[in-house]
Length: 371
Ligand code: ATP
Image 1 (cartoon, rainbow, N blue to C red):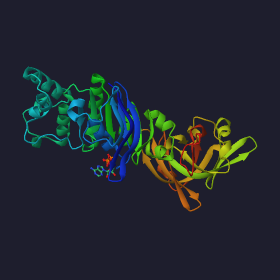
Image 2 (tube, rainbow, N blue to C red):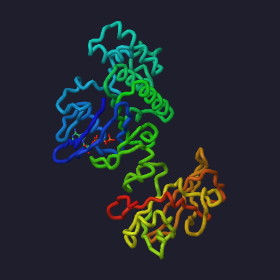
Image 3 (cartoon, rainbow, N blue to C red):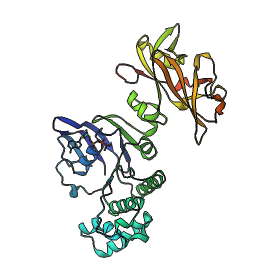
Image 4 (spheres, rainbow, N blue to C red):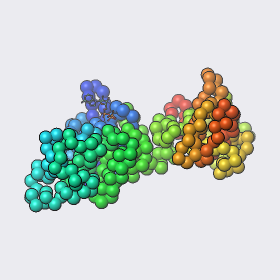
């Protein structure tokens, strides 16, 4: 099955919570809706489930319009943030609930419930009541209950947000493993970009009821269409600087009070129309290197200098937080180094080599990418 949303719209009063969104979820695709709180992710998901009426636009499953189809006739399984398991039923009864309400034979239920429980490693808890379970176990009951059914599509609304970091990691693996087996269209909502990046086949970044960009995690990371997407994707966040473009013979320079960088000729050509205009330059922390470790030739034209404020160890090396002088006070800059920067550099000025091929440039007024 495929799920297609065309100009999908939901209004609450005169405010559009979801404002004409378009996307398609392929046959066995794991599609993630991500964005800050209140951007319309849950409302979009609830329209797909049939829990929220659609005010405008079309929702299709395969090619059939399902705007008016009742939730239970859509044959979709959903996992909620607060788990929504029944406190008075045992784990076994909770998992069996969806199967019973669909009037499956008890022989089928007897076989499927332990199977689903085993998938989520809760087969030893089948007789317990939810209050006798930990948060992580309860969440696995909710997953087992939703996923025991052979539904046509699966929807998840922030299912991991009540779990601690370690359990969350395990649950991600469980959900993806299950998806690999079922190969059904899945829409997964989260506000956590790193969760989205690690799970999605493709993802849509939402902002104020609209989709800002759809693509694979890599596409969004490498080619964000706007400063919003650039800033939302990646940790630590991309460094954004106000700058201008200056043409000098064949070259185009990116100029800011704290640095002056010569853009590669391949990129300079595309920028001719933006020379002189205000630009927002985006440089990811991963694209700043200590000069000696840079995987490219380093010179004055591709180096900036910043004073180190803090060095944070990471698994790969260190994240360096530093400042550069700006027109209205210091500008913060973060750099992710592949090696550990010794603490003695704190308070010192260090050169940062910029991978110019990877600098992102946005129109400072429209906030849209200009490359
Ligand atoms: P979060 O990550 O915080 O859950 P979200 O991206 O899922 O946010 P939605 O829950 O879809 O966002 O809400 C989108 C907008 O619609 C918000 O401004 C919210 O206040 C509003 N909204 C959602 N449900 C209703 C409702 N039943 N009545 C009125 N306004 C609503």
